[in-house]
Length: 227
Image (cartoon, rainbow, N blue to C red; front, top):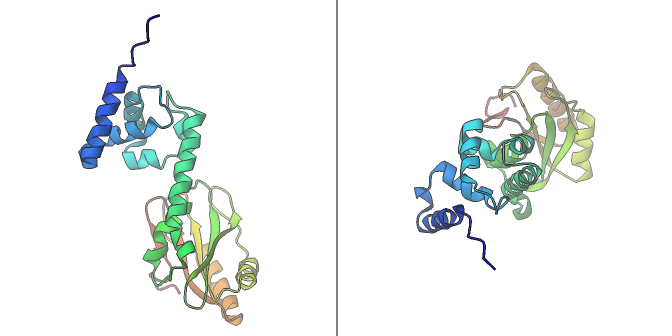
């Protein structure tokens, strides 16, 4: 009985891992992606697939943040890879939300940037979320309240404020995404924020900020002087 020779890429893959152990910075972008793909494609040569992904999406960062269904369309991948990408995305989002468990205090927009960009920045449809904090600005909840279409969401001020009262919050930060890539507040965004700020004040709640995120950047009503 003749044993099957190991695939040609096995030795290459082992050398990549040894280089990773010695100095991760020495690996090129496609080599890092190549190694990552081995966890979902253990019996395939992932080098050409990694190169194709970077060519298709533009960079390692763009490949890692690609929509799972677009990942599934890359030749050699499929629904298994799409599921793996969804898992990566959720891990990033939960890691960025670590402040929730730690009850971290928020004092600037930069502190919530990573958390909200990880959760909303990649979305292709608008969603509206609310961060609720106590009287020391410690995080109570980070919750989606509305899910909209490709370019708009319906946000109802009274429902948002009822959520804050239900969880005994002292303050809130409004968060939503702009799938088009421009984080600048629209006229509707300003009108909605003014309405919620007025109602919140009447209820003894503090509207701390309204943050709009995209895949790469964000804007803050507070930083822009709009609150």
